[in-house]
Amino acid sequence: MIFTPFSVFTGATLELLAPDLLTVRFSRPTPVLSDAAFNGGWALVSAVANHQMNADVISTAVEQTRYCAGLLARHGLTADTPLQLTAAQVARAGCHQVHGDRVRITACVSAGAKHNAVCAGDPPQYDESAENEYIALPVGTINTAVFVEARLAPAVFPHIFTVVAEAKADLLRQRTVRSCYSSAFATGTGTDSTLVASDRSAIRTFSTASTHCWLGATIAQAVRAALEQALHAEAAANPPGGGHG
Image (tube, rainbow, N blue to C red; front, side, top):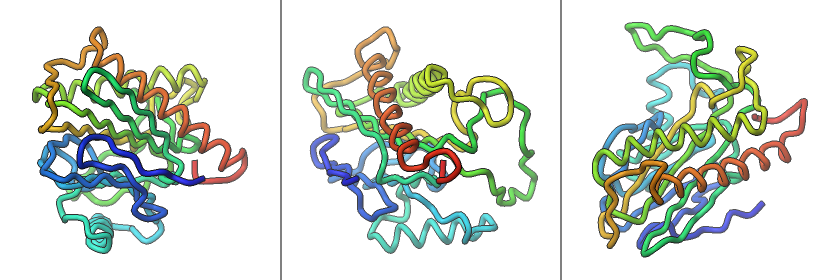
């Protein structure tokens, strides 16, 4: 499978910087909201990344921080780059882009759901301690990145997280993906991550991502299409009885 780079908005190209590192580098500081495992939160950044990590070399929170910081430095990415982590092959990510009136919506999803699928509300697997120690979890993550070629009102960023969660949960239900921890249909995995980036130099402006409106509906459709591609690629690469899932 060959990943072909493409533009998500002016001065921002989605590319496979290394076999295990999917990136978008921006030509100007770009607003991003993410719950990425490393550098998550709200920030103006010059890049975002999704990495297929080697979990075997990490056993503490300090080691994870060192691992992530070293990865960014080796590839010439700034230290504040939001970094999503997964065991899935990011080179097999699903991508779907929709063109509207002077705006592009792009969803990029890497997916592994065989071993860590969960239904929100399943019994918890651990309780975070006051020491915030590193917890090794089963492999399997759905990482979603949404790039909007428009200026977004502040409340739109977290609203897109809701749209992504709803679209993801419904597609997993349609594909009859079951939780690994109960008999319920999965709504995601226990380590999913979402990232939203907006083009501050764009012509269009959006004040809502309601699924009643074009933006929300289009993001949901793009996420569903990208996730469908990623799950199909995962199933083809990792038949029953093996693989990273």
